[in-house]
Length: 226
Image (cartoon, rainbow, N blue to C red; front, side, top):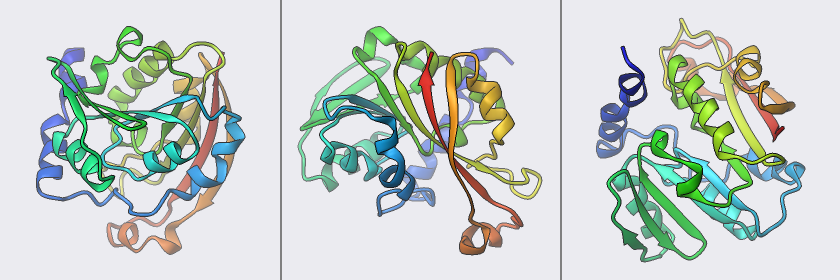
């Protein structure tokens, strides 16, 4: 299978999930890892933050409330449209064959395949918040994704990363299991990687216990681009 096929493989399934409202990963509340650890990145309020595979996440609104401008990337136009509607914003849209831009207030959401991103396309960027992107990608895609993030960020940039770790044989994913060793394998070449927290969530996760999981560790990392 060539690289283009590997990278585009889940797109149809992802769009179908949004169309069927099968979005169990979406949370109405702000993510506690974001609210609890973002300050540890020491990013100035004017920093522009990339939120990959953003969906309609309210975490983007939280980041905007901290003074950041937010650049989201999302495959589903339904998710993008819903985000702006829920924020009571009417976005301006600029057609693009790969990544259509929707802009309003402190938000710009690019609708299309994240692997079409380039540093030239996104401009000045020094921070990333990844709660649901790395874990949404299969193992082959994760390698390409980590390389992409490294290419997009200049030295000194920071990233807050949330990863899930469980027995992949008990649940096929997504979200996929990404172990601590894999995080280091993916990022150590280009980032200083620091684990900020590790929580065992299985006792509080009825949804995942019902899927057969007996262990679920969520880890939070701060990454600094070398």
